[in-house]
Amino acid sequence: MNHNEHTEPRIYELGYHLVPTLAEEQISGASGAVRGMIDRISKDIIAEELPVFIDLAYTIVKTVDHKNKRFDEAYFGWIKFEGSPAGIVELEGGLKKDENVLRYLIVKTIRENTFIAKKFTGAKVKEVEEAHVAEETVVEAQSEEVLDKAIEELVK
Image (cartoon, rainbow, N blue to C red; front, side, top):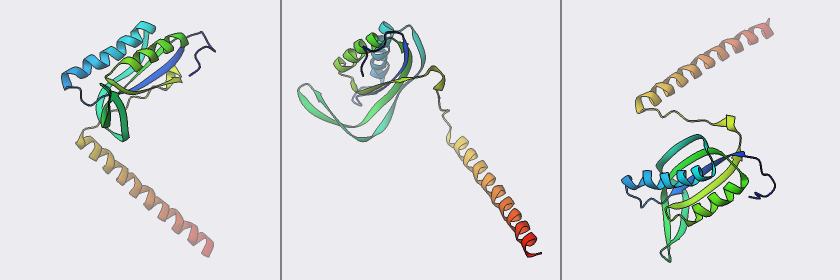
């Protein structure tokens, strides 16, 4: 990122992976360290999601204690905030030094597009799927009815 072009604050979103070797009780501390880095450069946190355990799409290699380690899983979290370009340079430096951060990405965005997905329980997902199937059946029945009427009108 070229951070020298603008000096006014902008909206950024940081997506980050934490190493999967963290114990469950260490996750909040590691994500708190990332949040602390953002708090040093910004006073406006717009939205965030705490890290959750995920399978990675591909293996990530990170040097830990002078050895290459391969990771196929990680804890993924994100934070949306307002900050200055100079602060982003400082944030990137801190993230690179943090041994718990496996990988990160900072993107410029807008304040209004934050979408937080609702987490469904298994029963809720089944209910949504059943409603979708019922909806498709109604659309299909209407389509056949409309098609039959159109054919009748053409035959007349």
